[in-house]
Length: 379
Image 1 (tube, rainbow, N blue to C red):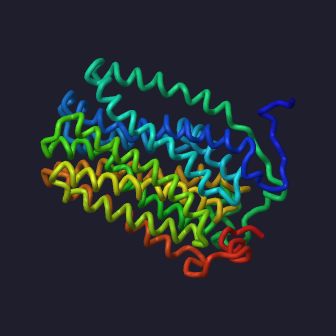
Image 2 (cartoon, rainbow, N blue to C red; image 1 turned 180 degrees about the vertical axis):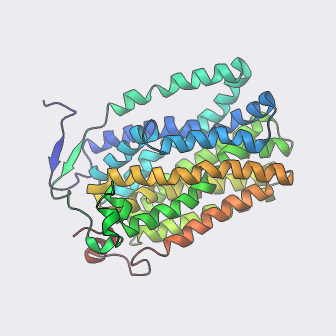
């Protein structure tokens, strides 16, 4: 038996084999990364009360954490990017479904972590609770040990020149090269807008529910319910994308629009049951778009560029993640409630979905091999 960490060379993605262990690694890593992020709203009220600051200022705590994980590498890029990129290399026909399974760990972890974090805060206060959360996060090391590099033959080709911005002086000095590629930049710009609204419920949903008069555990259960719906959405969204002859970018646009609309309706949930229903809808729609984002990126840049593409896209997305939650907190401080916060957050997602229309061949029929090469940019 050879070294399990040795790089494999295959003529095409195996669509299985060790790829399922890579999916497991992605599942565990998304659980430990996103599960913590999405449950951090439990700490929000503790920070507001302890430091005596406005919601807008306290929101920077979470938004900075998210953006730093996306920007440059000392967090997300060293954990999430390799796992998702590896899934894209191991799978082709079932790529969206496999990616959906890999990223569904976030939903399961969020379901468990929201009430768990509230219990930890009640038992150990927020400082002690954060120490326990840090200890849980060390399991990322074990998950990373499951990753096994895979090199696909003929997959090192560069993106075709027709897709590049006509900036020869800039492109000669630019690294990475995808920073000069039009379809990639449009796709990334769309998700800068999406991220400006996407994380708002995970920061401000619990405080919003508390302001409506619900106790801390009922408020935390809203996040848990949204997390279960998110898990289902990620698996179902990926499964539907692989099963039906619909272009990934079209499905991605649909789920993004539904996510934005459901977020804008959250302020209508004045009763607990209605608010719960809206949170479940938001969780399902928001979960369904995630595997299509990464599978769609592989369609645009090719699997040979997927590692570079995910890393650069996440770095660009960090701008949206950085401003989204503080803007929503500022709107709450200015207006006295979270109504404007959720409406503006939903509008960011709708704006991102509109930008997807500008992608090459967006209005073409379900793509054949020729159209796929033109969109992706491979020669």
